Structures are given as C-alpha cells and as structure tokens.
Length: 89
Image 1 (tube, rainbow, N blue to C red):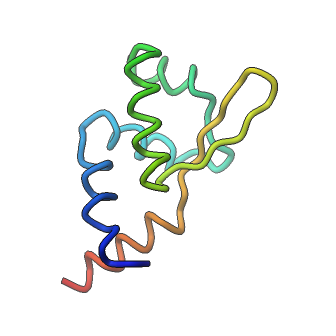
Image 2 (spheres, rainbow, N blue to C red; image 1 turned 90 degrees about the vertical axis):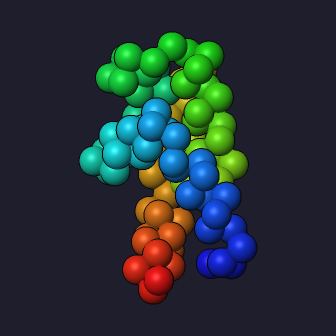
Image 3 (cartoon, helix red, strand yellow; image 1 turned 135 degrees about the vertical axis):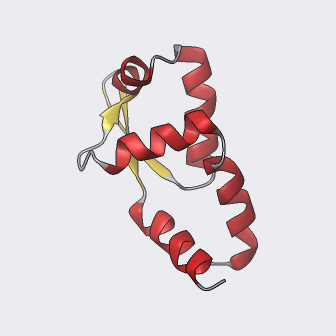
C-alpha cells in the first residue's frame, strides 16, 4: 500500500460513526445492507450514506448491489495493510 494513502484512510476511519461502522462490519463475513447498518447503529439514512461514501472512497468498504439493496463489506486487505503500517511505527 502506498504510504501516502494512509493518512486519508485513517481520517476516514477516525470519525466515531465511521469507526463504529467498521467495527460492525468486521464481525459480518457476508457484509450488511445499508439499512441494517443504520438500524443497528441508530443512524439516519442520509447521514449514514455520507459516512459509507467516505469509507468506500478510502477503500475501507466494498459494495454489492442486489436489486435496490446495497450491501457493504469490510475491505479486509486495506484494513490489514493500514494495521501493518501502523505497527511499523
């Protein structure tokens, strides 16, 4: 991973709601639909949409669409690469 991307990724993960989304998704092998994430974290749809976009832009989550449902899954390779970079400090 390009070390120049790490601050951007950490900034995306550093917001409390986005961090909670990542924690939630880390326990979900198959990912979760956006609506389910919102229900579990008690976050409104428009607010959650903004947070999920930032996580996707940072490559921390990936998406799949089934009809009108968008599901999100933790991008473990990005999360692990950031973890390795941080442990090297």
